[in-house]
Length: 204
Picture 1 (cartoon, rainbow, N blue to C red):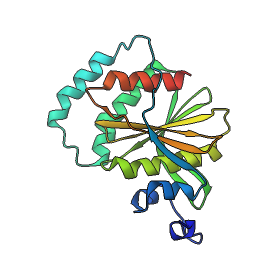
Picture 2: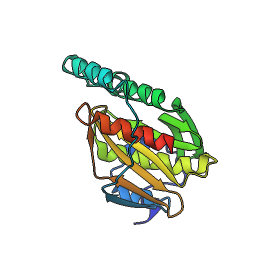
Picture 3: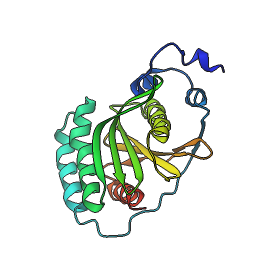
Picture 4: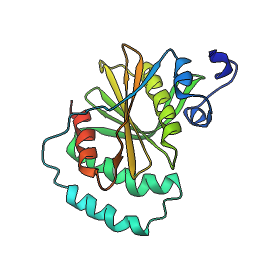
């Protein structure tokens, strides 16, 4: 498929615009000479003590039945932010919220969350629904980040999250391939595994 039937060179696109495109994800990524694969990714997990896990789990379990999760803002504030705050506790990472990136008129916008630790970058994209389209937006953000940062990190990591469901992805900067993890992590059921993966990525 011609890239010009998908991305019009005379038009400007933000990251969020790619969420709205109805084209196949692999065709959208092909516009940037990037391949898409889908498989189960086996992430190493942090083996240290998660001293705040019980408290975080309890707070989420208590609040979920009484939370209205009809907006992305509610999911970000009450489900995603508490997880990322605890990730900061277990790592030396810094967290940027609504981090602006401008690579070109086709690669620009704000990253919902960008975590950074010793040259390792992790992008978190929050969505109210539709993980599949959300992953396309995440992939575009990783492609942009590849050109935006100076880092020897060979794999750029990201996750798309609705707050109660998380899905990981990674971008191989050398082979220019985005891999979408087939595994889904549910909160609070898989909270410990989720935290251990996030922490280990940033501790590498």
